[in-house]
Amino acid sequence: MGSLATHFSAFLFFFPIGLRRLLCSSSVYLKNPSLYRSKTWHFTEPKWKNLDLFTLLIALPIASFSQIFFYLAFSGHPTYKFAFLQQSAVAFLFWVLLILIILKENLSPFLINESILFVFAGISFLIEYSVIGKGFTGLGGNVYALLGGLTLVCAASCIYLSIKPTAFFAEFLLCAALIFKASWVLQIGLSLYSDTFSIKGCHKVSSQVNNIWKCDLEEDSLRAVALMNLFFVGHAIGVLTLSFGMFGLLSCNRNLRCGEGSGPLLAELESESMLMRPLPEFELE
Image 1: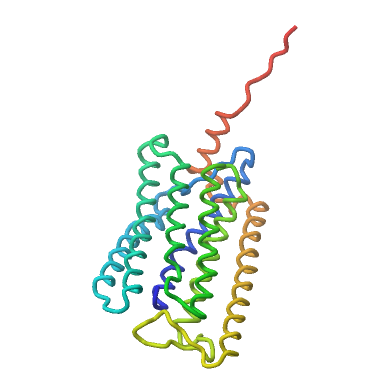
Image 2 (image 1 turned 120 degrees about the vertical axis):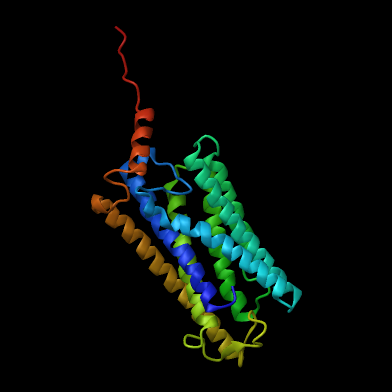
């Protein structure tokens, strides 16, 4: 990530996924909390409503090959050059995850276990964490460290859901973390890569090395870090308000729930209800 455009693209990647996941998972949970089980992806009918999934199937390999092209064309420091290859691998892993999800949905639910998919997603987030902020120092290192923390929350949530898929709090945490990652990535792009919203007193050291920022005075550096931390707290409050507000709205209005009237989410829940319905008890005389 080295420009406002790439950060905005990441925002468009994470925000719809987190928001849609929160809507669908909360709808299924509110339908019957005792039968809730988390899924790696919530498919809906008609198929055009899954447009975000098919868009990612096209966008992720393009992003991966673009990073490989930058790796081959970049002639700067080897550390920065290798970062392009690592980012390409992360995009490829998430693309493979989507392929596995589609195969599971269309072939057989028993072919690929849901827990395995969550473990794969958790590993992908851990690998993403290992490449976030690599080579960044000063203000850039601080903001990307916060982004790395959100990535670890996503990884931990996925690993926990692979062990206990009925834990809605882990699902809710995963959704909120994805939305938070989206908003924070956009904030980083605006603060570090935009002249309009840049922090006063801090600037790039070199136009060829995009991941080194320097502040003119020590006071400017401290103020910049404090300001970004304040922004982070503001984003956290906003994301939590949005997440709890949406959950409360769905609990009060059934018509807003995903798949409430019909569709695979409702059909799946009803089938699980039939399978898990207790047998009648007979009294022995």
